[in-house]
Image 1 (cartoon, helix red, strand yellow):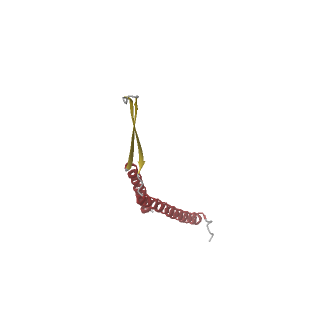
Image 2 (image 1 turned 30 degrees about the vertical axis):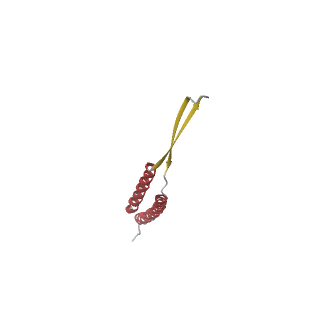
Image 3 (image 1 turned 90 degrees about the horizontal axis):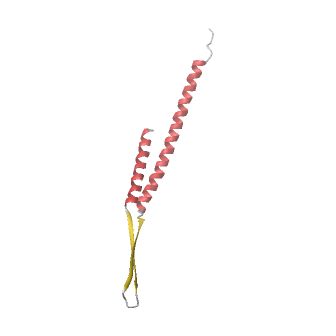
Length: 110
């Protein structure tokens, strides 16, 4: 069924866009540490600052649930399309077989 293939393609596009949106909408955590070394008089001898950034993905559970359902629906649609194609192929082969038998049957003498 052509409509089923279009629906499956549309679902895959939605899933791809949802995945891309999850990657784009990530949270960024940043941590800055400063270490200072002083001498006995309280004078700063050495100071070092380190900044560490970690990207943590933000998870949208509603979008995730919708994406899972879309995947299940797409798999169901693909299975149905496969069954329909197998049925159509079987019907076509049966028709072709009957046609071949009709044309290759021995001719009856009158």
